[in-house]
Length: 328
Length: 309
Ligand SMILES: Nc1ncnc2c1ncn2[C@@H]1O[C@H](COP(=O)(O)OP(=O)(O)O)[C@@H](O)[C@H]1O
Ligand SMILES: [Mg+2]
Image (cartoon, each protein chain N blue to C red):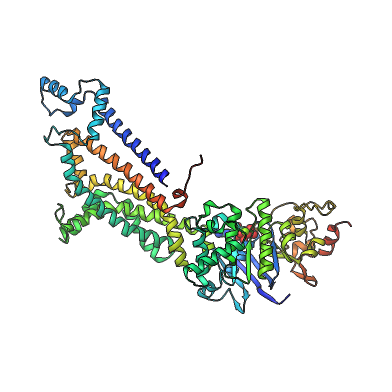
């Protein structure tokens, strides 16, 4: 694979002085699918919104850089950013049904996206829109074009959102839990669609999810986020092979694997994400961690490389990995 | 949509019928309606004669049928106080109140909506802090009080505008402002809340993610969605204007329906009062129907709604 298309360096997002994204760094290679996983509230959406510069009013980028096509998206003018959004870099959302304007037809919403960057005559734009609907596997696209969002199912709305996002052939697609709101069969269909479009267009995907099953299905590489920080990074196969952070194990435990024998019972990991105010000096996961030591409470472990393409933020990662190994 | 409109139209007809019935019942509940209608100081014989003449000695069902039939023919009877057909008395006043209400609505909309839009889009800025007190004043100042203050300032002190009468366009200015102030505040508040509500929706971020400007998102997406509650409120606001007209017309000696209502109540001209009650109710119902029709034009969820068989 080629070099990185998108590089996030020490990115921080603050809401009312609280760092909800606290200095995260990663790179997305061309054609790669990078998954960001973590419990709800750990800062995944804020990361995506910060990259797109579409943070809620209360939030702002408080540090770091987002390098894309030779520019720092955190610093360029809004007009420059506008020219990139939906054009070179796109975003799709968790709630497809509420991501479409309820008062506008599917055609108009698609044409709006096309015209924003590639102004064309109405008939050209309409033809492009129709082709996009066909490409995302919508049956009877001519009829769907004239319909309103309330006439479409959730899965269909997400297909439309994907069509809108990919209409201008972006090089990066940020997908913020694109299947979370959909039921299981539809979820599988949307993932299939994303895989097909990825192989057809070579678009890099940043796939945000809290579902390890989706990660296993889609991703090349995985970032595990906890309380605004990256705690583990690995290629997807390596991560499923061995987890070097106890939080990753917690996430894994929630996935039923049909293709593997049940794991040896893991030490129970209880508790919830600490409130940001309660964060002290030590490891943010310490209060929930069965491997916790004095060292963990005293000093926050940095994200350290432990093998090529593999990093973890745990003082005891070797002990953790050994304890969590799946028996052969 | 046709089905929706037909069903709403039928509902409105039923409401109108209900109002007529309630008015009929109330007139009868008060006892013998003849006593309400005779001029003061009539003799027993005159009353009996009038009762027969008006048919109030007939069975109640017959009276009810006759009452509905009269209304159907727009025959509201003849005022015993003025000896003139009620429809003529009311009809002569309608244009004045329409003019006043239209002026007030115009003032309310052209001031209220922009204030609502600007304070929603420019939240937390100086311009919001300048505009919000205007809304507050419009909302909290009683009409009779603001009316008198306006007269003091523009008619007495500055002598720019006439303090009463209805013969020139200039005599509409203060009246429209006094009557429209509350509606202005309502439009501003509803528009503001509605826009702020829409701005927080996910489709706004999704539209921005397409790479269109914030201005266009507001113009094309947000305002249209935010219009739906505003339309509903607008219909009720017009009805409120008619209620407010009673006070404004009294303060400014404006010869409209509000003044007529006050005069008729004071003069015990009950057929005119009854006509005004019916007119106000029917207007209210029709405005609601109009709001629903507009609503269905804006919102495809209603326009295209097909009830499941
Ligand atoms: N509009 C907002 N105002 C204040 N806090 C917010 C807002 N949106 C999100 N947050 C907070 O920011 C943190 C990160 O949220 P988010 O990125 O949405 O999490 P995720 O997408 O991983 O579930 C959470 O703790 C959440 O409470
Ligand atoms: Mg989220």
